[in-house]
Image (cartoon, rainbow, N blue to C red; front, side, top):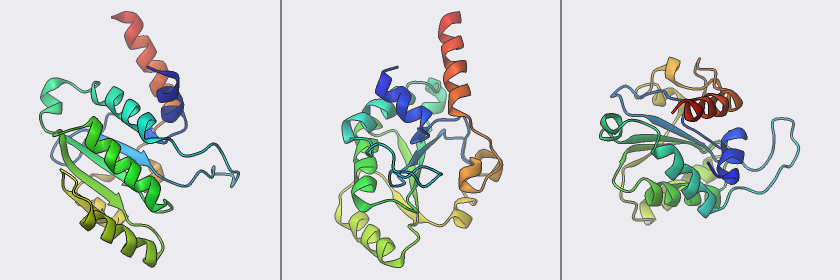
Length: 174
């Protein structure tokens, strides 16, 4: 794992917590929130396209071959995201998960105008996967609440530091 990958995982920009959607596909979560921490303090810049491709590529190698055959379901939190960050995340998914994407769900931005811009962006861009703009409530049709992180209204507690620690222990044992 590269240092930039580790940083993006630790900062909860991206997560592969080991949960599945209702069809059994692995869930990959991308948090495209603007670079403001939970305390309202500006943090580092949003990750670059290259950094996103790197960490998504790394995470896509973790699930078993049988699970990967189902394709990944990617959930992008677009509630407070800029169109630029969303576009970067979608392109990174297309690059890193080429032909291994089952669905991409983009949680609708909070502002109506941003929703319309994103809708236009999704129509305009020629992505090679199905991308759906969705509300948190409708996301529950595809993902059980127990499989959703608490940051998205689910009941799953995901600790990125513990995830990295367990990953390191796994590597030491193999």
